[in-house]
Image (spheres, rainbow, N blue to C red):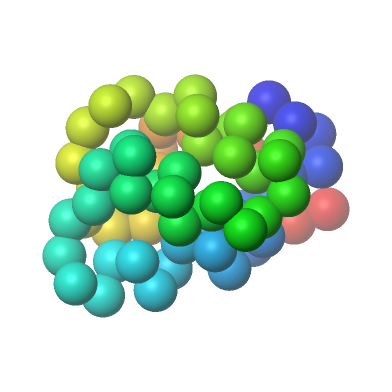
Length: 68
C-alpha cells in the first residue's frame, strides 16, 4: 500500500458517497477519481463487494494509517 495515503485523505473523497446507501468497489473508485493516483491505487486493492459504510473499507484495508 502507498505509505503516504491515509484514512483521512481517503475519507475526504468517499464519505459523502455513503449518504445514499451501499456502494460497490467500482463506485468507490469512481468517487476517488479526482484524488491523487496513490489513493486510487490503494482502493483498487479492495475486494469486489458492497460497502454500506466507510468503516467496512477500513476493515478490508487495515494497514492504512489514520494520519501521518
